[in-house]
Length: 488
Ligand code: SIN
Image 1 (cartoon, rainbow, N blue to C red):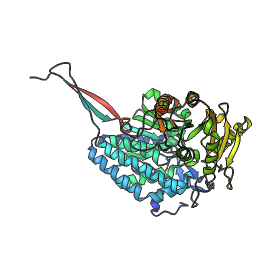
Image 2 (image 1 turned 180 degrees about the horizontal axis):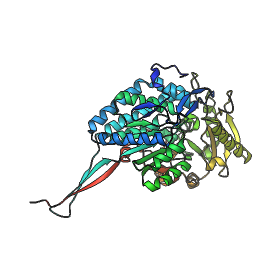
Image 3 (image 1 turned 90 degrees about the vertical axis):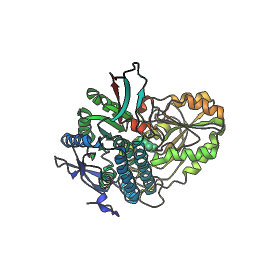
């Protein structure tokens, strides 16, 4: 069935992985997954429903009883093995990812290495779960706080990072002693299933790590309403995050939500332009602009606006649009037709409202699947791309005059995930960093995603943090232990 030739062919699974068993949906229903570059069917997956999800939850609950009683060193050893296997199979995992997600092969391989860093980091963090003692108000009492795994956790993951968003959620869950059920995007399930193959090979016990494939409504409905599931971690849109929050209210679940962004990127007159251009390229065009932390609005101070536009246009002209499997391609397809239509609607709206198409890369591919990178000048706050995430390779340049104006424009959004700015002035660096409303602020760099640093948003960009020390805390609960009546 696999249209992909891999070195380790069994990494490509068309079955879900529930309670340690590779199997289809109880209903027998399947969904097909298409290659976004060509529309060719990559394979089919089980379209699991509430019954399949319940089976995964029951298996996770049974597994949790034993998994929580393993030592941190035992859990760390399994995570280390999983980490090594992910790196060993980087080439196959990247091929699977490019086939279902579209990103260029080199970028997919980069994501596999990025995904692996979370497994390594949380293998190490497993050994650093610590409690505390509290000064007692009585001589015959001691108060201790110990950390316990929250229980069965569920990870609902997006299509834009089919590997890294799984490891960023599951590695801390497993390190903490939780069992975990993943519901990957139905657009990119094969990378998730391949990761599960490697987790099985690493030796995780049955039920500790399950993958339930299929459409979101039935699976999400069961995960949110099932009282055994104690924690849900989701990456995706703010609209779906709010829905999950509402649906989880009756069972009072812990939630981590990594939601939409509308990242500002501010270039001040005193910026190092080489740094600003390189960082803008890295931030704006990663994954063809399809990340929650891609710069969405680029604010450039009047004194360097023309120079910045010219240099950005030159850099953008080097992009090669095409099927991600073709060597040399640097911009792949967008995930589906709806994504292409949204980007085009944003561009049309901007052009109608006075933006200028300053530079664009020719798209020789199917226009219903691919969008050539584009630089727009004369962008204004009236345009849709100022208010909504474009999620595509479009760089709109807004002009500003004063620092305060840039800060106000940057903060004029309900989102607050990432923000970037460029200046060589130390005083301005602190002033601006402290005023930007975002969970992540980057000065003179476009790279902010790394395993040791907390990642997450404020405002409607979400709650909770992934990565860093904070990432494992999301899967732990404090237990306060009062020990009274001590005899002297
Ligand atoms: C995302 O787009 O949701 C995650 C991006 C990242 O990890 O850098």
